Image (cartoon, rainbow, N blue to C red; front, side):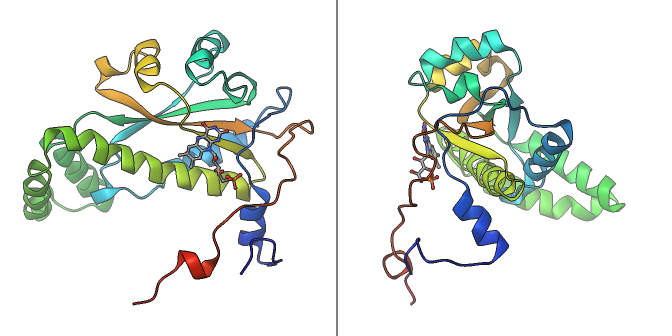
Length: 217
Ligand SMILES: Cc1cc2nc3c(=O)[nH]c(=O)nc-3n(C[C@H](O)[C@H](O)[C@H](O)COP(=O)(O)O)c2cc1C
């Protein structure tokens, strides 16, 4: 199937409608209600074991956004989008995270912590086997899943986004003082509304064919 083919399902229409917005309308701001919906979508993202080893950081301060722009290939979305979100992953993950998850699960589902003890041990044993340097990478992968939730949810709400990997994580970490908080910037999302002047607004989607993309074994 070509990406030009018209599919009328609302989900596919939303996914066709969205695109990595290059130029945002700086005058259009996301409402508090929509922002809350996007936050809820991020909160509901799936993560390995449900550990959610990340923080979602909205940069509201325009001065900070200006500071970040030169460390983001100068991309205009950094300063022009209604909202700028840094998806920052934990540098580490371990026993304390598992204990917190077990406690939260017990409280949420109203069950004794002891009932979950063996599952906690199972998680801790598995996570301890992950080499230290691989843990941050594993956590970053969880942050990228949240990015996917965000892009899809925003599209459903007719809110534009641009996922951004074109930035210097070291500079972001320094400017936002992330390392001291056990965090590092994984990926960025600019969120807002497309400008009518965006030259890429009406470009056809470029995607591999399903024949190329899928395998059946
Ligand atoms: C993780 C990730 C990082 C990306 N980084 C950038 C970026 O820094 N700047 C940009 O303009 N687009 C960026 N993109 C957008 C991609 O180029 C775009 O999603 C891809 O070309 C497909 O086009 P579409 O999203 O408009 O359908 C990024 C996309 C992803 C998923």
